[in-house]
Length: 195
Length: 239
Image (tube, rainbow over all chains, first blue to last red; front, side, top):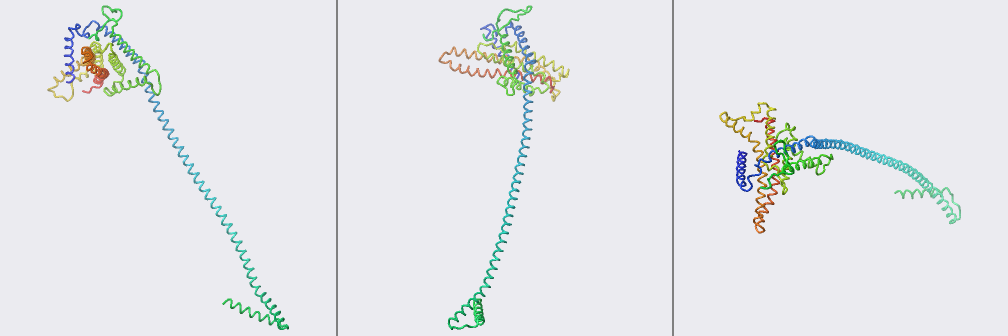
């Protein structure tokens, strides 16, 4: 419908132009058939050559270009994907290695710590044992000393008291009785201390 | 109307009794074809992955026309790609060269557009009959039409089919001629109104130049796409 209206419009325009410009220059140059054949001839020649050269030479080249580009891009994308996968693999490996080495380092550390702790404990135990022995010895010595000191003191006390009595009274008293008295006294003292 | 005059360039050439002299119209046909060949040859020469300007231009035109054909006529029209490409480029370049001042517009002559359109019409009809035999006549009988209306519809369809070359050629020719005439008329106004009143038609003239460049592209596109549609009718009988 629209097409027909347009055609009708064009035809009327055509006619109008024809009458309008008829007075000016003897009609539209387009309707002058003088060079129609020449135009058709040159149109066929030029368009024919254009068509043949484009079809045989140029368009295959362009489509070739487009095809190679397409395939190359696809290839590149493929290789890129492959490389991406590979790099992902490598990254995974790397992470695994790092994790392993971390675990190893941890275990080494723990081992070393345990060893050191063990060492320390052993040394401490030995030291404590030594100390205990020494303390025991000293205690023994002390107790020996303590036990012996009583006797010694008694002896000394008996001697001194015998000397004293001798000086005081001028005669010798039986030493055994003095010893008995001193022992009694020291016993009483000890008991007093204990109480 | 001087710009539409055809005149002889060089000597008169006669083939028998027929005058086939080289004219300014022939000159611009040759210029357009040469320009197309040079540009596209340069564009197709280098085969780089990242195209330069000319290569990009040629490849974009290629995919533009290829898309146009596959959109309108489907994949069966692929063998006719190079013809439609040449047709589109030829009409486009002729239109565009016509936009240069003092240049001759080849497509503003009815005989040129009519020969192109008639060639397309005859070619499409031959293709249609070769593909479908006499079944191609089913094109004139649309499906789903009541029997009563059928005779009328068939007559209308036949007339519309036969008017295709006329509509196709007149559309291009009239568009080009009207645009150039209008620019000439406004140019004449600029002169006659002088320095005082001539600015308005001058600005119109500038705007019209832009419009005409658009029309030059659009008409080439329409010419090519209508060819695709006719080809589609011949290749895929849809009616």
